[in-house]
Amino acid sequence: MHTLSYKKLCLIVFCILMLLSLSVRAEQSVDKLMIGRFSSGSLDQWKNKAFKGQSHYKLTDLAGTTVLKAESNGSASGLFNEQRIDLQKTPIMNWSWRIENRLGNINEQDKSGDDYAARVYIVVSGGLAFWRTRAIDYVWASTSPKGKIWPNAFAGDHVMMIALRSSADQTGTWYIEKRNILADLKQFVGQDIRYIDAVAIMTDTDNSNSKATAYYGDIYFSKD
Image 1 (cartoon, rainbow, N blue to C red):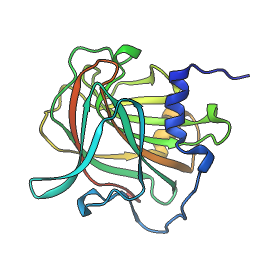
Image 2 (cartoon, rainbow, N blue to C red):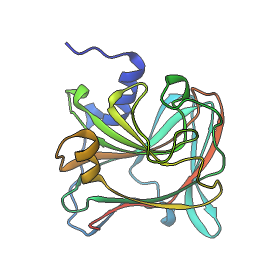
Image 3 (tube, rainbow, N blue to C red):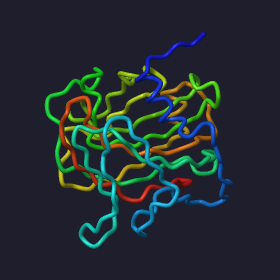
Image 4 (cartoon, helix red, strand yellow):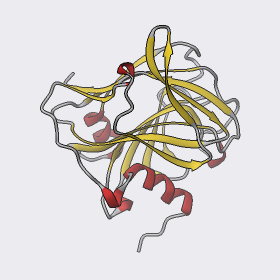
């Protein structure tokens, strides 16, 4: 029998998304698979999930480009895009992001400090066996050093955290990311996984009761 705490279950439910109404969209045989078309003014296929309060997400113009703006004030909610992606065809996830402020002196490995100005998830659903759900959470850390990897404070090794950005990176500056998801799953989850089931975005400050503003650019998968 598998037992989970309420908060751990909530995080995993967020990762497996709308499990009881799962509707997998047809795979696309393309070299570039768009997930977030923010620059075209679209939030199609992105759905909201709230844990505590409501972080606010909206499309906005920034220096002539439409991007997704996220604002959190002691809140924790995210957007997710449920789509089955074949990593053998498009293993590389590409995105850009920027934050306007850090969250201060928090311990991100502890439940009281499990907050991030910006984070991007990839999710592998366990289906009805929800305890088998796995996720990798790429975060913009406030206190953890760049490159640090650790199990999530609430979900344990069901969700592996990777600090792609840290206090060493500038606020108010765009950074472009490219991650080989196929390789990351092998390295950090320990499994050869061909498909992921969703991508999620989250700006949250509920545990530290602080504020954060972040921006997200287009998200897409590619062959290289």
